[in-house]
Length: 196
Figure 1: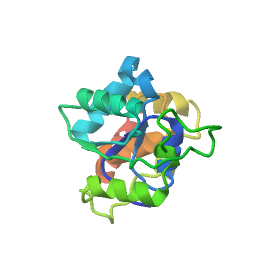
Figure 2: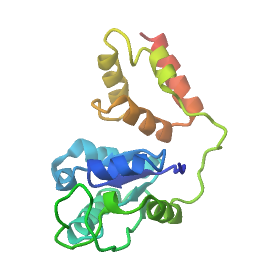
Figure 3: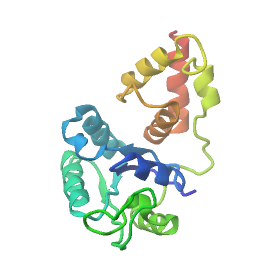
Figure 4: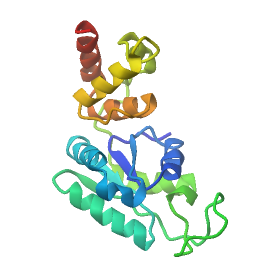
């Protein structure tokens, strides 16, 4: 598993699932061209571009290049890095036939190739490796999971920190651990718990 400080922006859920197997970075799934009308997702991308930087990792086909351009434009006031998937002929195993361009997308490219592509643009982590990220146990201790009204509390906590309230617990922790240092996030959780 490689550690990357920037958030990675991908097209779909299969891309996100593939990346979650190789990196601990937060992965933002755009839903393809649905991003054009999803203002919350656009705001999330802008925020990450300003706070941690983003790596755009879309397919190398024409649709992927168009989406890459749109993402780069909405994140132009932050740090944007471009990870380019090599054009490899083939089809994803879950699909009955190759895409129109006849090349593999992010979900179909081998893990070692993706790791190499990401390492080439990610740079060095800006946090010390020995700082342990906030865990689900701490999340539970703050009342954000496993308790009465924890889903409602989690939604409020996420929205108060500029994140969509409908993130899964795992996504929420990845996003928050990348935006805040572990100490900062623990202070936020402590403050939240104290005010409940």
